[in-house]
Image (cartoon, rainbow, N blue to C red; front, side):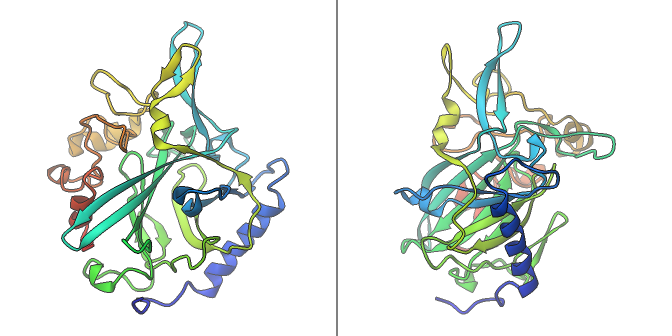
Length: 326
């Protein structure tokens, strides 16, 4: 294992996380109080994806839009169907994908979560306001099953962040990678993560209120085993949501919005960014994974000339574009 690029997280960071965890676990079986932070923790049955499944600390969980939910189909008064995210039941959707580069073969463990909305109000005009938004968390493992790199991005392609672990050789880092932490669109995230050393340890992602931004990432101690349950389901299930008439996709399946999340439009982003990004649907959330056969480019750079190079669907090229040399 290579020597750490930076020291472990400062004590004050670890203490802050442990305090949040203590509060979350204390109230995990009770009604959610105002200002409450809750911990979502998946069970650990057999299966690689479940063993590695991330934990989530969600702030202000008394607000339904902050809670991780489960997409479902419901019938409107006019008889038409719509897709919403139910905040009363939490789900993580997962999938495994393999890829190769000139340096070797790798495996991605892909996790996806969704929320009912990013709210909009005059007092908090969130740029990404809209319904059914989500987050992707991708763990990249090597042939020895060591976690090398964590990639997080909202399912619109925005707020991309990379979190290398102590297992990743420093020669694979982008040039001039920070040593003491990194600024990601206004939040301070670790520049290096301590890789989990036992099966019980999990990375924990702190989810900020309203925006659902990832505000911090730390290693959850194996001794913490209590939290709100979160259901694990295959990522492909999002294409086959059950309803009375059979199955219905979380994503549009025909027309110009094929491959985009239903009931999901980002009007502020369209108004303020769409015209110079040359994308009328900028900020709208997209499908990703084996079952996605749409032609929508999951670009992660707003430079319109770099859409294909930054396309998350071509993971080796995506890594190369952002300077990672795996």
